[in-house]
Image (cartoon, rainbow, N blue to C red):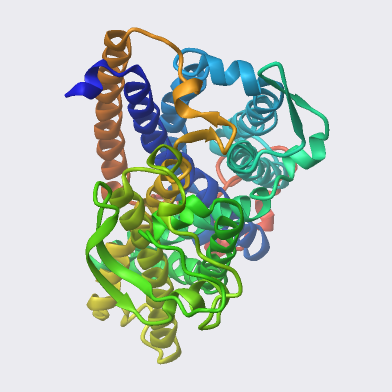
Length: 479
């Protein structure tokens, strides 16, 4: 229990708790925002009322995730001024501006137009409403851009100069477009979109599994499937590019990801460790299952290496990551889920080509629908695992190879940090239960298919009720 008296460890635990919990909510709003743009665009194009009802249904889950994401995200910003004040003082000239951009450019844009997207259906012109939905989606994804830019700079700092313990920006463009930035942003955007697709697909599969609104949810199921055809394999490819960057810029992290103790010289083949039991004290793996030559194919798409893979023994214990088992298996969890989702997508496409996804028989494909229901939470696990690899694997550095984590933490009384850690744990547990409770209510209630289209009951600016076909207008009983 020595960690209870260690301020640095407690501050790391607190930031990990807030980050892991907060990450659950923007993931869905980022990808679901794109889906809402697609579904509302289909409604405007086709005037099919099902697409309108889809937009009204899925936006409820968007608002729920947005609200909890805001509540859980605020403490993260404050921690930079409390638990990590020395770090903020050192990197604030650049890092602070990027976090400010996220708040002013992204979050404010999303929040400003969210009200129109949620409550403006009967109050504004449909085109204006669609523009609001697009701006909400842009704001949500801009948050991803700025947050990943800031974190990528911590991984590969660029465009700055250290002057008397503080970073001064000498090339802002180089700092923003640091070596990790582009692939990191792409990897995260695809991850949020893929996770959202399989959440939407999983919920749609659940309705069809229960034979509720089968025809209605077969539409959303097929829409996410079409998008997943591009997203799932592209995510695997971008993940490969990210791995190449880790090999080049953070060799200690790669060694930790692979539990590789000995250096593999260039020109040799490299086996890939599928499973292992890393032993940090003995500096070896107690047990290991390997695939011959596979690491060369993973890193360079060929059996022999053109550049060496450095082993952990190249660095002293103080200069390399710890918690190797966590890093090692978090990486494998992320990869396994990525391939599972891509495989599920391919199997579903095959069933679609066989005509098994038509609304009248799709409910009979219970094994397939069950697979999608099972896959719904897997994207979250993959994303959290990826962030564990990204941040724990960066240790012992907060700014890679420049500022050690032990020097970045504020000198606070351990008891104070432990108190706030417990407070956050309790608060976030309550928020999690609230999210499950209200999310369950939304899903169990289902969509309101009797909801009239905008302009049918209350004329709104720029909308002529006569533009809708007779079968798209409400009956007298519905009115």
